[in-house]
Length: 276
Image: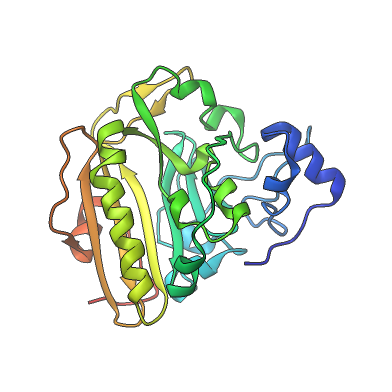
């Protein structure tokens, strides 16, 4: 995926504010922002990206290739929603929970074949997000939760995309056993399916909160009650979703239908298509 590049000066400023490494951030820039789109990572002293002012189906102008028919999920406008484009995924970030609302990917046989990069484990706070709306590294320390990827590191087709997947904007506080056990199996099975599909497979992953969620860290990062992973095969027009409690005793169970996922979350994830 090709995005606008930073100038050397911008890349150095962004890297200093995030990881101190210019390689990761050289490709995180977006083109000029719309009302609901996050711009390139902010230089010191510059304005943060504007929150979404409309339904998010109007956003993500620089990375619509990650959505079926180029249409992002239709989510009603609310404060502190910001869309972020990366090399291999797109995030709608919720500054109220300091976690993603959803993370979108496009996978196919070729991209899965390329996904053999060495894991970096260099987590970082995304400086494009205002400090008051994002998680920081210290929030997860001693919390008892994993920094759970929504777009898995193992899905990433390049070293740069792999490094970007460790943005805390791509994380939720996740049960350690669930993350490394049944959820990892779902991620692996999804990659396997995409490697055998006849065309593009679109994946949307995110958290669901019930009631007043528990939080971790000084920034009160919300702990999800459930996680979902929607899989849509564009070549067959079939869609299904994995739904799993964010608990140590979670088990892999039969997927639910797309209609059931929409009912449970209130989000129209595939507004541009009519899946079976």
